[in-house]
Length: 59
Image (tube, rainbow, N blue to C red; front, side):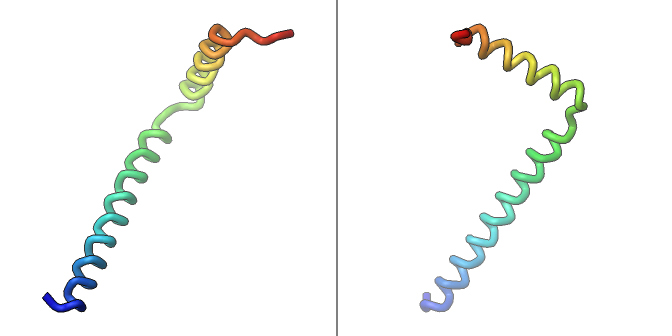
């Protein structure tokens, strides 16, 4: 193969990687946005309680 062909193959592989990354990010964003505000709040409270049990504050 000529050098120009290798650059074309490398460029196409790079573009395929960018597209695959975009698909993964979009899918994750859709799942993240699927939570209601109440679900997010409840999960944050739950995580905070777990952390407080593991490391009590030194007050």
